[in-house]
Amino acid sequence: MLRLNARESAIGSLIVSGTSAVAWETTDLIAGAAYADGGTEGTSVSTTGNRALVGYDGPDAIVSLRHLHRLRRALFIGAASGVIGVQLFDGSSFTVSTPNGSPLFVLSLLRVGNLIEFRAEPVTREATPAQLHREFGFSMTPHLTAREPRRR
Image 1: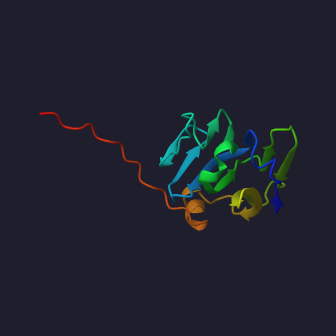
Image 2: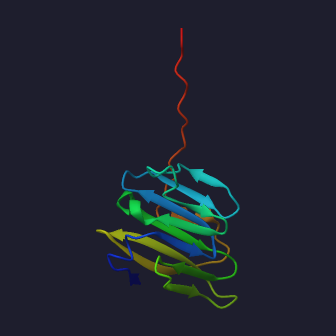
C-alpha cells in the first residue's frame, strides 16, 4: 500500500504504464472501462475541459488529478509484461512488478478524502478484464446517448 501526499494527489496527471485495461467509478457511481487497444465499456466521464477523467493516451492510462474529487476509485489491470509503472507530475515514480509465471497484479486507486491510496493485489493471469471488474465490485453503467428531440 502507498498513500500519496496532498500535493502529489492534486497536481497534474497521474500516468500509469504497463496496463491493458482501466476501470473507474465516480462519486456519482458512474462506472466505465477503457482498454489499451482503444475499446471502451460502460460510461465515459469527461471533465469540464472535455477530457476523460480516466482514459488512455497511447499506451498509458491517465488520471486527471485536477478533477480527483469526482473519482471514487479506479482499477488498473496489468499487461502481460507484469510491470506497472506510475509517474507523478514531479517526475517521481514507482513500479509494481512480478516475475514471469507469477500471478498478475492489479493496482487499485482509492480516493481517501483528497488523497490517493494505491494497493497492488495479485490475480491469476487467466482472468479476463470483465472477471476482474466483477471481482473488485465494478458494475459498468450502460452508456446512453441522448436522443434528438422530435420537432413537429
